[in-house]
Image 1 (cartoon, rainbow over the protein chains, first blue to last red):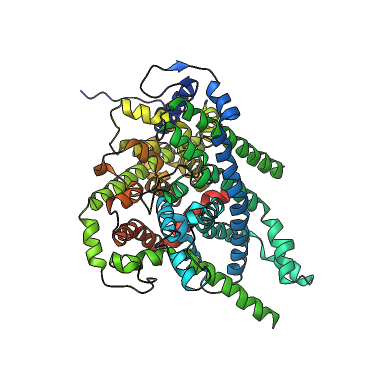
Image 2: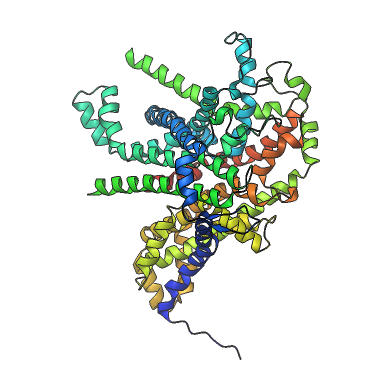
Length: 304
Length: 272
């Protein structure tokens, strides 16, 4: 005889929430706690774990030059890439907004980089800037812009420049689209009023459009810094993609070493210091958390 | 006169950016039609006629297998994550129950945790389950996607009128029936957004497969791209052909449904 389970009405919201909550605990929360416990240990994955308290953390913060370098690189790269991409996205959106035809077309094409697999982006750029066969060197020497080929990937600032370029290239169309939908949300009366008051196009842009999009700009800036802190695929691929020969961690003089790259290298690649690596990831979490709080604080301040 | 100059400048700016956006893809496609040794004889601008041979070189490896792996991972992950997020979204948006606020706060706080923080623990956990070198770790990590749950909660709250749920209940619908018959049809647009995001995230995922898979019959697209230079050592045209097939189909798919996709991909940002 089949037993009919009688489920009380009160139980349903819990049953509906359960698949998410249980899988989150199982596949995300438990690993986070596990990682945190490991970060308090010295462990290479094989030998006995040794409890060291917060020693990994203090070591990273006081003695690990490369961690500091990685954080510095990230902010350095984002310091230039983010404003450029934001300015580019904003101006592009403005031009596109005033266009009658072809909006969808330009939006779609400029969105391509954003949906492209980051690893592929790194791969393609490692070819573009390759010394011997790379497009950039070939083009610049044949146009006479360079007398001889340049080792783009082997110099500190050109390496950083390429990473910045990859980030800008990837995000420009996305930022443009976000701004475009922000602009669409501004009531047309606002523009109308400014026009009647005799404001020029540039004045309308700088005194009306830009201030009204402030929230969007702050959102993009903060998410871009958070994204930058998690950067790994593109810079890593830049140095492992095209030319298989040389794999050096972090590029020339560690100039494009990112926090995640360092985390990966410490935990899985050059070293297998799992406890230490876990501590690196938690410090990254703290930085991201601080930025997220900043974002929340700003949003709630605006809402008041 | 001034506005005309402005218009030309704006069009030039837009034109240059658009060309820069599309150029790398064009280059990949063009290079895939060349014989490798001819690549360095000059700048490849126009297509050559070596594409089929390059394609053959790529297909002789386990490329199809890798593609199938990636599709399997992304489709399964997307389906599961849409399901769990729609369910918890329904629960949080349309029920008042003890513990609701706790669960909602839980979902909100999960959004702040970057995935890399759990990576080491997750890999060790998967190892103890015997799932290393399988595709499962790449799927399971997306089953509970925090943003998806948050987004679906907001979406269901605003998209489904309470009265309809109430009247369905009066008509004798059970709660699961309400979810399937009432909620599901209403939330299609929201589900599309979540599906697009999770599909892209899982399709592009690199760090996790990099540390959990080393059997090349289990590779996904990003892993394959990262090993191309050792797979085809000096056959650069074949490398580009493989990259092209990894990237271009997704872009074509995107271009076909671009309106829906762009709305979906930006929906998360606008809410914020």
